[in-house]
Amino acid sequence: MGRRPRGFTLIELLVVIAIIAILASILFPVFARAREKARQSTCLSNTRQLVTALDMYAQDYDETYPWGYTPFQDSPCWDDVLVPYLKNTQILRCPSQRKECPRSYGMSYAVHAKSMGSLDDPSQCVAIAENVGYQLKYWGVFPLSADPSTCANGYIEARHNGGLNMGFADGHAKWFAKHATESDDIVWY
Image (cartoon, rainbow, N blue to C red; front, side, top):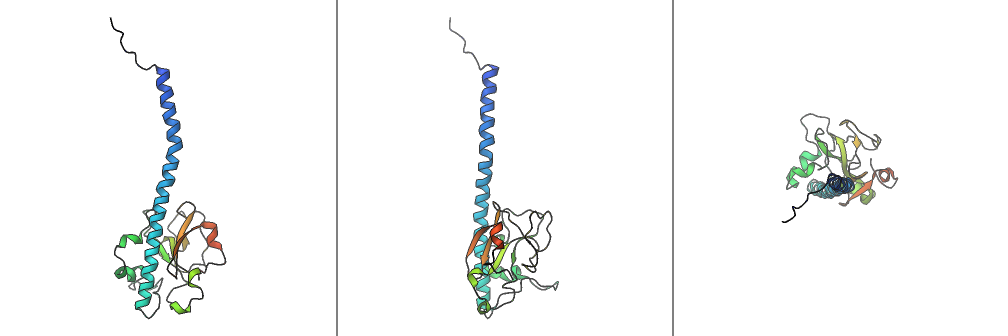
């Protein structure tokens, strides 16, 4: 007579489950960081495209940047006037942005309604960066928010691996760690 195959014992099954749980606990944070890194890259691409559109707008309008913020209810803001220069308006939203906040990017007061020629060093002049809220009215007046719990107007947010993406008036975009945004070399206003 043949022997019947024996199944797993309870101990063997518990050991296998414990090993799988340990591997999962190690790998899930790695996958989360990789997913956030991919979102950071998409956001950096969005920032670069927005800076390019901003420069194209300025070229068409006597080398003058649009108003970053308008106090008039019916006046268009900077992102409204850039729509003709964008192939896809979905780039106005960061993939990591919280859903309850209406906008993902803000235009710096450093370029607000200024001519391109009036900028001292365009490579150090922030034009667009990630923010929390509707618009960044005056960067430099508001501090960097350590933990913005609401969509308060005027805060930049380090939502990508402890940093944020910023686009500069010369057309380049770069990721910065949050503490690096406080450098004296960067012009905010």
